[in-house]
Image (tube, rainbow, N blue to C red; front, side, top):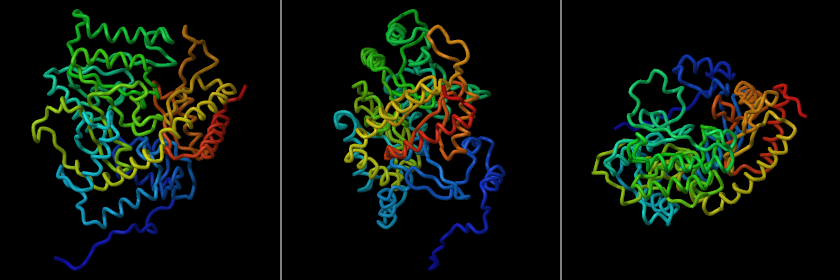
Length: 460
């Protein structure tokens, strides 16, 4: 036993003090798989609330917030205090799946937020990422039903591990990856701007609802009855596409009638992001399995399933993971959940989302490259199009992924961080802190218009 305590401190004086120098070192240290530094070329020195400061002392309004992980923004004082409380409490930092008073309190509070105050649900702590939780949900659905196939949806994003990637719509990361999980059937997901059936409007939603029900009921469909259907109530990476209420309700009805588990991936859309605590609440449905990560850990790695108790078919040890017991994440998660609930952040977010969409709709009238503004709460998508080219038969202009990429670059140069998504990357996506103020959203609007002008887009 040594009487010395080793403390590693960051000696910033020995490190380069420019973004380019840090990025060059990162390129030496890290794999080609890194992506965000290629689009957002900065080295972060500090962050507070919705603001990030880089090593050159430039400030940026952060409308990415860790891809939605930082529900309360950067370094919220109550979140920091919860970390300090754990550190000084004597608790171990990781406990596998052993319980602690902190885990007990977190579990009880999280369950109370689930449908019916969680009385019909139990929790499963998985590995630390949303993809880990998706893997567990798929395995459990197969085990509980004795069936092997899964239905997923085009445009859906569920993670990059093997099973999660298999139920993800994006084809690019699947290139040269052989032997994807067998028996995954993809179906079209509604899109407010580009109906996948080429119909559009309410008629398109009704047709997609019928198509799903008919596929399940048709004895000649060629698709075996699945163990589960997995979907996002608002597709995030797929372009911020909210599921129409009627369509989502029909899927819940059909899955219940056929004993098919409905898995709702709430990793990005959950915890007040869409103006409801969970995005599926907009349709008034109850999933069989709820996948939770990102905001549930209050900024630290944590992933949890909410499972209807009658489908908890696991035997002890049949799905494990070392980092299931992250005490720091349970502390920051508990603090975050309490603030979201007790301060009624979902109501605030719902009102702000409508206000912001109204402001963007006004901007759209002056800049026709904005094809559509959509989303719920503070999960907003801005689809960028080519308004000088011919519309399709539904009145939609061609997508402009190149201009979207240029706009992201010009936003960054103006001190605004946001992400892209959707087909061809044509959708600019907003996922800011849920505590962002209207004044800060006005800053976003100003910087976004600067980016439009900087990209050579002329107002009409």
